Amino acid sequence: MKVAYLFIFVIPFLSCSAFENENNELTYRWESNELVIENGTSETLYYAAFEQEVLAYIDWFPISTEENELLPNTVKRIKSKDIYEYEAGDTIVLYYWSGSEPPYEVFENVKIET
Image (tube, rainbow, N blue to C red):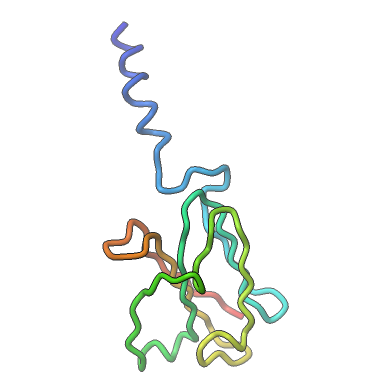
């Protein structure tokens, strides 16, 4: 009987996470001169992408708007010309976060070689 109670109380906590779909992840790739971001989660995420070296010179902070919104289970394509200071062959830094105001549950960044 105690084991049954353990499962009743533990299993719901094991299945809870910020992302609850089958892929449970945000994926990204460089394809045909575009940054492709796939939000395979059940959460709305927001993003910002910059050429890596320019980050040493700019002071940016996350802003959550419709323009940089990634709805759950959607794909967004960002043309290279829309990535600040990007030139062919540069490294891109992609930031993504959840929520429209700090503190963000998720705040991550990844480097993408092009």
